[in-house]
Amino acid sequence: MKQTLASRLLRKFQPKPTREAQPVVRYLRSHLCTDPPDSTADVLASLMGLAEALEDFSELDALLERQQAALREFKPGEPPASPVTFAFFYYLTYFGAPYGNQKETLGTVLFELCRAYSIHPQRLKMMEALNRCSIGWFQHEGPKDDKVLLRDLSTGRLLETVLEVEYQGEAGEVWLGCLVEWETPRWVTMPYVLRGSNGPAPPRPKQWIEWLEWIQACYIDHTSQAIFLELPESSDEEAPEGCFSLAQRWAPLVVQEDEEEEPIRPHLLLLVDEAGERVQAFHQQDERFSPEQIQAWLEQQRPRPKELWVDDPALQAYLEKHWRFGPCRLKTRLPRFQAAWRYLSRSLATEEGSLLELLGPQRARRFYQSAHAFFASNPWDHLSTEDCLAYQDQEGTLWGVVVMGSGGEEFGLAFYSSPSEALEAIQGAPAIPTLSFALAEEWLVPAQDLDFLESCQLRFLHDLYPWLCYRLGTSRPPEPRHAHLVHWLLENIPEFISGGCAELVRDQCRLELLARPEAGFEEMLYGALLTGWGKKSRHAEMLAELLVEFARDELEGPELPEVLPRLVSLGQEYLAVHGRKRSVVIEYFTGPTSDPIQRRFGDYLESVYPE
Image (cartoon, rainbow, N blue to C red; front, top):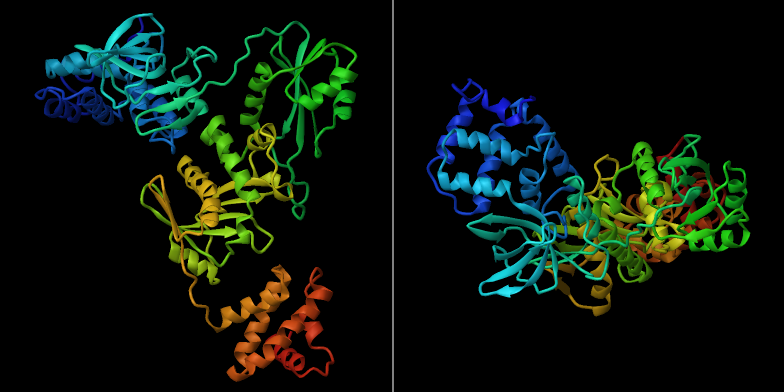
């Protein structure tokens, strides 16, 4: 008979502890043998400490490595940064995540070690109760005295339960969480409350990690006492023989044929056998496939689909009229297609930072809807790139934020690590934002987010797409907390502008507009030139910098009021001819002229740039 992880581990402790085991024995005797437990949370904390002491023991590698992998993937914390709470994560990974044929967990393995060392009997009994805890769905059936009646939906048992949380709930609610039967049943985690009792039945996972996937995908809202979930619609319809699903998506891979050309993200057309569970065919091209192109491609496939399932209403309407070989039905979900597409995307995609994966569908939809409303409000009409917003988030961190868009080239938000850093960047100091959220070309945005935006029917300025980037030029993707920072500003900056108030305080966050620093001579002249020309392009900025250098080095202070109008007109004349062409500043201004200011400027350019 194959030995259990617990028995293999115990061999290093009994009959005599190995040298490797002796520090663990000291931990057991000093932390667990004498003191009774205060609560289930106290016992969980002591087991976490014991697991940390055992992290170098190979017998626990499999259990600890998968826990660490889940920790990296789901990043437990507090909503809205993460809907997976620390309490639920650790109760699940210690007591509800069986491993191997013996169905061992971290909790059962550590329990056997603790039992061998005669720890405090009360603590040992509570460990045993934790290993029998129920993690799943419960129906709230109303209060009873100082307790609440909860029905375990997996067994049907009705339990008079002590709530060790603030949320009391209401009869009829369905909760997800952890219930421990210690002396009396106790609810020990912040409840996940399922909204929409008339929706699909709560899921029953085959694998423990599916609990975390569902929470992340279905999170929609929270309070300080509870987290709210909403399950997506499900389709249990069985696909008939010869039924194929068809859809086009943005390709997971970006294509760049030449280093000098801009990358592009093609479109991919995929045909999946819904009954046979296999990819039948695929096709790729740069532009989006038209219904006519899709029909022509379909007619070349063998065998031809006897029934088609599609998720695009426009495509379904077209094929229903023109496809001659069987019915074409509109489906909100394409089960086999989605499984095949998920596998393909994970196999091919190289980019990270998908907001859809980071937030889950419900929160991602709300985020992108807020972004759409933000860009539609044109906040750059009221805040220029010379304005600095001081933004204090819920954790008390102070950021400097600049609204991009007044220059007409980039649109979005730039986050700096402090208001002073943002002010320095405004005044021309080289500084890369810590975080940026801007409209970008499609090849910068993860493919699944592009597909999601299309499914939400959200389109943005200049056919660009919203892109969240952490430290441009690094490979580190943004975190959920970064998305939350941006989301708060997307929702509140338009109101801050329209309200005309000095500051806005909401949700433990604060936003205020800092006074612009007084510009020096060079900044004032530079701004006056660009304002006079009415444009901010690469050519205009370069010319303004040259004229500022000229004025600084060659003009006396009293001259400037008289000379400034002529400098503005010189720039207008140049930009009218060469504003959209290559730079010919030197050739233009050093040619023959009778204008004394242009001659002085030309002489200055020749002296500074003799080549």
